Image (cartoon, rainbow, N blue to C red; front, side, top):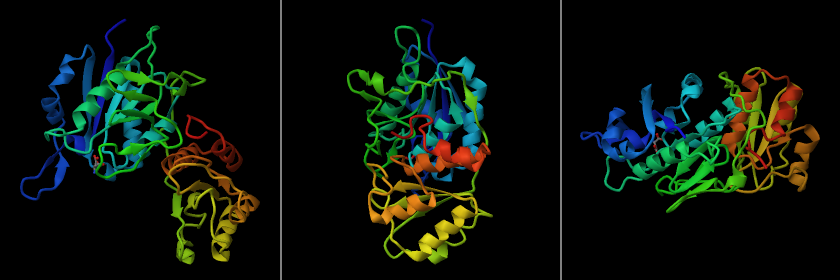
Length: 341
Ligand code: ASP
């Protein structure tokens, strides 16, 4: 087998940050900084190339344009590399991983996102292990020379997760991510143990790219006492075409006439409402309780066990593709890239 060729794409994040001596704040540093601190990379029997986005960012600054840029980098280099590692801040990594999983379909190569909680230059950094193992996973091939991972995944602190199934759960633990509704794709110990039966395989192995996303998507998280009238602007179909509603438990909401009025009006104007749960695990089951049967009656779509990140980016993707309402609703109810059970 030929030497695996891996492209490392640097976008910023703590992994490549240093402390500003004057203010004590962390800020992005030159990408070369990473190589200086991970000389182990040179010992891999891999051909490694790296590229940086023009202006590395804290991932809180990520926009839909950054996702389009990443897709373009992968599109340009797809034929020439066996795998891709994206270095990314952990704050919005699960959003980027979810978005890329929809924008890059038909993958037969791995796209592994990783980052760290401590900058790579600090003594106790988690960045080195994360980067080294992510590169190893991106280069892993089976006995037939096929990539073992053929999807967008997140590697963090010894676990590999499906990108559109995980969320950041800790601001300070090294184990910053979890994927409660779908088990790990791999666990790194002495060996990297891949759970082969959990890995996604596309039915049409031909890279299909969608660069356009729509930003006409709103997110409303319900809470006791929510002044729902002040959300009227968001439920305005002229400006917003779809709303992800984060509800309680198995998809429940208060039987509040203002909320129901806004939803009914929005849907009859052509808007789409997708119901996901605020719980980190489990699934929406509309109609299981009286407090969710209204949703069934008016045509709110169940997001089942999708994460909020997957629900939002799937909607941005589907609207970006310009699907008609019927097709869009159909697509929301099926798993496209392993994002729901
Ligand atoms: N604020 C940083 C970022 O998301 C945190 C991190 O990298 O973990 O870019």
